[in-house]
Image 1: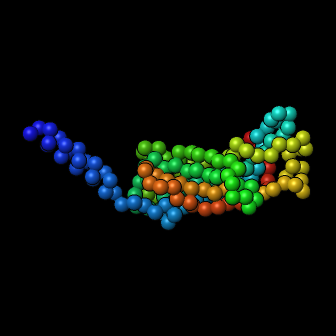
Image 2: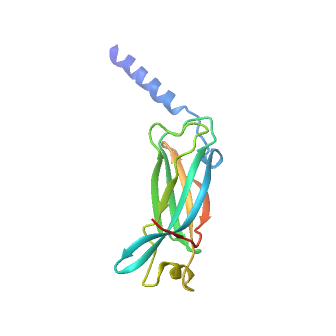
Image 3: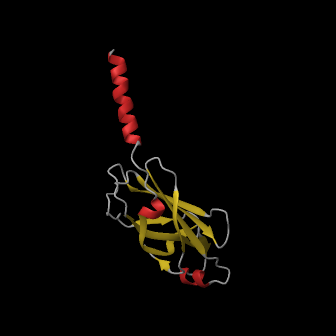
Length: 160
């Protein structure tokens, strides 16, 4: 009789942990303090390298703690449908992001970018330069990724 009682307790814990209402991040997670630009990634293969970058904070406007909150950003060049680069961060670990709380500043940068022998500022002004955008998505726990917004990468230089 001991085994079925143990299974009942484990089953009850499993069901109760899964019964938390799901939070719609598109409505309850606010992207704030957004800043974009082109990060000076230094010299690579003898050339200056610039990569698209976005910095932001996430604010939990829900009434629940968002456990294991993650953010993913896809970078795209111009109107391309293909991913140019991506970045992933854990915004809040297992302790979660409490209701009303805001994350620290999160900075996400593409691995892909532009390389040139031109000075960095001239790279941004080059007639062949193609602008980029960042598509920011988030998820918490085992929920699905939800898109929070699209942001144009401003043509400004960000230095380390």
